[in-house]
Length: 341
Image 1 (cartoon, helix red, strand yellow):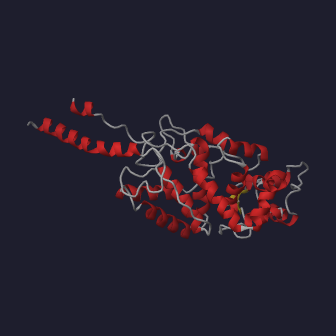
Image 2: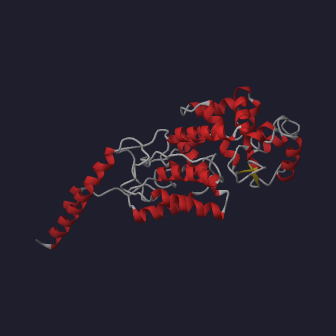
């Protein structure tokens, strides 16, 4: 057999060896906790160890990784579209109003993906890594744990408009925020419980300045802000400038995942308008009071709502792909016909 023919035959046989794996992949049409038990049993250990190291270096990273999962799922389902960089026909969601100068933790996801690809190449999706990192971040910060359903695949596209339209803003009304949740199949209970993620993390001055100076006109602070808390905020968030100054979403226990966030709302110490309106609105106030008085009740509902959110419109089976890099779609495969020509 001549050299060229031998080379084509070798490539052909190599490609055939991949085919059975493709059929195995397509057989998994639904999410399940044991999706990687055979193909990559070490994946959860890799995610957890990397997340632990990242949070040890910077406690704020727990909130950042948890938020990435939320920002991804609310656009076109939990498909890692958020992680795509702009290239070719793709316009990244990272530049949306909700994400620009705010979403962070992408480097941690990159580190996890790099380690997983070394051991289990082409097996674990970036979408599943996001879901696992969110769970582990919550647990490491002192919150509850839960079983993560796995088997999501990664999107081949992003949606900048979807990110701009679907992610609730810090100064939007209760009705608008609730409508964005219900459009995803989530309820008011989910809204109040998932907002409890703000028990950790930080927000920029530009996210809440409106409440401090001009929401009610005349430069006066919002009446729903505790006066002493508002005075402290005004001292570090001036009427102009200091846009990137950071403030703890929970001034009492900023790095601890607990129910103090809800206690703050009862005391009119919610940082963002989107936080405080959960207490000022009559429809959601009772839930805030219940979670403020019972941490276990909050934890239990948070788990239910996170699982529900994490299962929003996942790509499974033959849809999407398993990206080699979370930042870009895979290069097109060369067909057998092309190889053998």
